[in-house]
Length: 163
Image 1 (tube, rainbow, N blue to C red):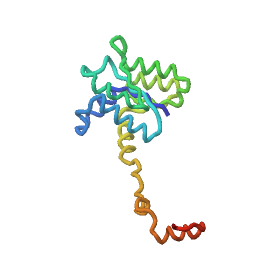
Image 2 (cartoon, one colour; image 1 turned 30 degrees about the horizontal axis):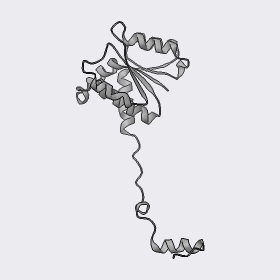
Image 3 (cartoon, helix red, strand yellow; image 1 turned 135 degrees about the horizontal axis):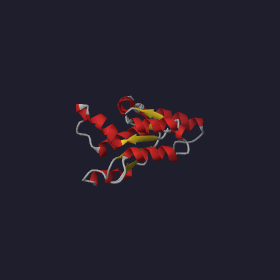
Image 4 (cartoon, rainbow, N blue to C red; image 1 turned 90 degrees about the vertical axis):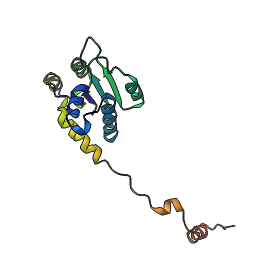
């Protein structure tokens, strides 16, 4: 399900936890992107305004293939942009809208999109990232190859000479 995130709404929720109190826009976007990888999905994060004064960190996010980051600009706000994206979506029932703002959640509800409060979403995200599968250990034989005896057995089986 495509994700629409009210950026500063989620960021302010995240910063209430002392472990994440120094998190900035770019860090939040990277974590959301990691989450989307585990979900095999795509998303949009919409922030109010024109973005942080130092745009360098945000410019480095260009490599995130599964996440688009928007700033609403000087004459709009994130809520308005999110509501418009919900309205314009051709499959709104497939959207997950992350915000604690009542108007945004109401807009999602009118189009039958799923809305999730920022604090609830953040806990789900952390749990998902914490529990993602660890790669299985490869058997040692995979790196070492087969023994000489096994090689001889296979060569004999296929009627091939070792020389």
